[in-house]
Length: 242
Image (tube, rainbow, N blue to C red):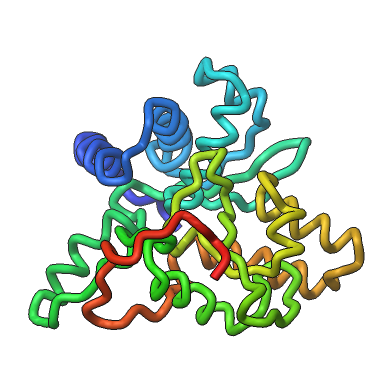
């Protein structure tokens, strides 16, 4: 397949629009710009690199670069195909192909429908109904260990921890049991799933399914059911147990 011809000016405009819409910080902009330069702009989709190498190229320390990669993946700007100590393999999307950038076109097509909540902008820890929507999406099971949990023992957890700039989006909040919520703490979800596998709390099949769910979650494919007219400003709450 011949690589798609890229209009650099349009890509840059889309990049600036997307960065503003997602609220990307300076480090996230630098990392995404570098990855775009060495993939899509050169007619490639994927790039293999080590974290120290990328940090050296963008002249930023490893920790912030790692956090930027996680947040960009959470927004759907890139997909982490392989992540290991020996190197990372990522698939990078053009700014116009990032799900957040397509919302404007989708809104235009749906303008004749009754106005409803914009899932991408909702804080799913803000009200009881929104928290319940996340629990309902998981079907009463822990997102991590797959154990069925009683309603009063359910917790909400950030896939990308808040300490690493994780947001309260439906793409980053999952329902889990209290044990997993405590044990995972500030670890990444992928690392935690592999830890459960090593502890034999997950089978190899469960681990593969969990990693696929993480990708689907980041891509916005696991959308909770939010009823029309949901008031995301009400019932503000700082807790995660309900």
